[in-house]
Amino acid sequence: MILKKSTKLLGILLTLSLSVTVLAACGSKQEVKEDGKAKTITAKELKDKIGKSDWVVVDTRENDAFNGWTLDGVKRGGHIKGATDFSAAWLKADNKDKDKRLDDALKTKGISAEKNVVLYDANGKDAKEVGDYLSKKGYKNIYTYDVKEWAKDESMPMEAYTNYQMLVPASWVKDLVDGKKPETYKGKEYKIFEVSWGDETKSPDYLKEGHIKGAVHINTDEVEEGPLWNRISDDRLQKFAESSGITTDTTVVLYGADSMPSFRVAAILKYMGVKDVRVLNGGTAKWKNAGYELEKTSNKKTAVASFGATVPANKGYIVDLPQAKEIIADKQGSKLVDIRSWDEHIGKTSGYDYIKPKGRPAGSVWGHAGTDNSNLDDYRNVDNTMRNQDEIIAMWKEWGITPEQRLSFFCGTGWRAAEVLTYADVMGLKNISLYDGGWNEWSGNTGNPANPIETGEPKKQQ
Image (cartoon, rainbow, N blue to C red):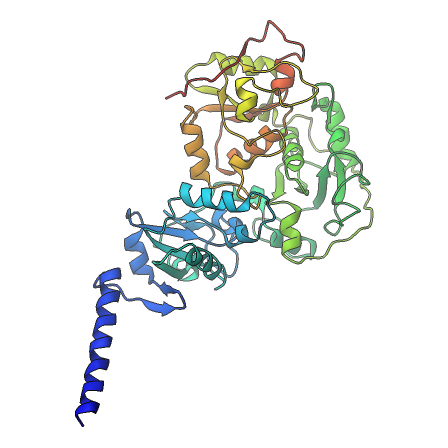
């Protein structure tokens, strides 16, 4: 009898001890439930924690959902206001620097083991995957949440990028191909293009690996030419559009193994006057990772009689040398933003074997890029999707670049800068453009005294 009473008393004491431990860790009013290694949290509790220094709220879904798309049955698109992002898809990315970049992302986003970390998703999988990853790194205070509950309540604040529709998820393209009417699509004629340099036999995607059903190949030589690699003349651009079956009202979807050429063509099409230009966020890898089929047939272009407008119908979207000089001369409200590597910006290298001069246009400011002219790691997540808007703006702020200024982006020959221009457009910036000629034109390739050049490390502008 005494043994039975002692055992019962021990059980009561253990239960009380566990309760005290949970309350101490989570606050006396917080109700948590064990869910594997993580705990669940209610919407009310989550709302109270947002913005507190010892809590961080993390969206673990595909970045398309974070940007604004209504995926996985969520009623409203976008992310919980105040949340950052760390997608489960990043853990599967094919990137040789993945581990380092993931560690850097955790640091930049303030996701640390010392904080309480709330991971949310809508499919019951993403948060668990990220939670397991963090647990292996020693994180203890991990909570999970289903964002569908939050999205149902219109009083709960959510944010989406102003023009999120410009970057599309693979599922959106799949719905389009299958004859459905996906979100934001107005049901007009569409065209899908795989974009890369060279003809379709040289494309790493088009015939070798296969392409999205119905996609037609675009060789970047069709819209730009050397030696400056500026866009071709307006008359020739109009003929390119008509021969490709593109009008001002065509929904154009662009993608490729490397997305940079797609953004180059996207910027030119917008300059021409195409109203609905989309790029597959993350490129071909996202289509393959979703398990969607590829075809290897050669699809030919179907011409149209008229583009529907005189090119350029959106002239200010791309500017040339005279406008670039005007932007530099405006010391207050404008910035000519250099989207090249730091070594290119300070004149350590030109970045190109066919460009001899080194340096930057005098008066331009550094806007970040990547380690060399082949990547844009500072603007991309590890899976090559668009980086968090807040982090992009924070990068710019270090160099005196602000969203309300007139911003014109340039690089060596327009590819990297076109991608950043699109991201700025997605973010809703208004007074933005691409300086098409970039360093190749400004430098004159042999040095042009009329275009002053600076080298060396600049001072950050406040």
